[in-house]
Length: 235
Image (cartoon, rainbow, N blue to C red):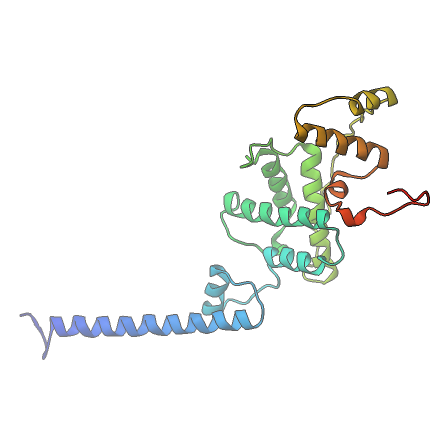
């Protein structure tokens, strides 16, 4: 057996392995300490955040993902359910954009700039949706960007970022002339007979919306408890 001084090679290898295992145990312990600290302070837990905490990398403030989560939590009592749902959709799309196009799990709002916004706009228009619907058109993309802008405005008000990355960005909406039904056309729809109950229900809901001016989400959330008697004693 090969000798190195008075120690064998096998002995040195075993010692090196013990030292390596002890080092890994120490690293594991420190990472878990940072994990529990982040959990106790209600911070967003991510692999990148744990790595930065272990390496002692100073945090630059709220990350973009944390900002979006903060906004959605703060606004949940102020926004209607339908509007709140739109902001949770933005949260999902931004995460997807960061992973697919920016090859990262998160960024800081201070890193946002005009190019980031234009890349996000292009991603919205090219994104292939899993529900087989078409990618966003111009107006749809602008609505998504407007919602992200409102979140960034919150960061500006809280002084988490010094400058507005949307300062040079101009939202461009395409004005569409909306058509409308004549009373005769509405009566034709109202009198249309369907043998399928589902289609008959869709017809009734559509006509009901036309007469009341209620939006889709308002009709969708109607329950029997919303029916009350009017001055004529009828529901």
